[in-house]
Image (cartoon, rainbow, N blue to C red; front, side, top):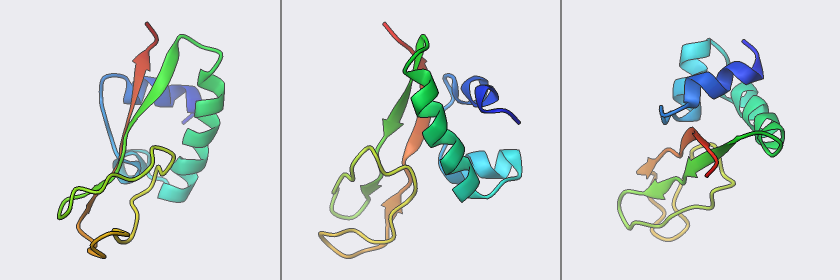
Length: 93
């Protein structure tokens, strides 16, 4: 699969890194590398990557949008009940 195919996969279809890796039969680390490269490529296109950041389901702490993978523990309540970030490709306005 090419990185440009990720645009079609993620258009109007929010997925986590883990979900993408399962669909593409790749490791999440490889998918994350491809997504980071795709972000750079999208700067010069009509699309952009929208990241719904990871957040703690216990205390509600929201992580930075730059984190594309699921954090291990919440820095506030130290629980591991974290919802994964979701990635979606959207057209620019």
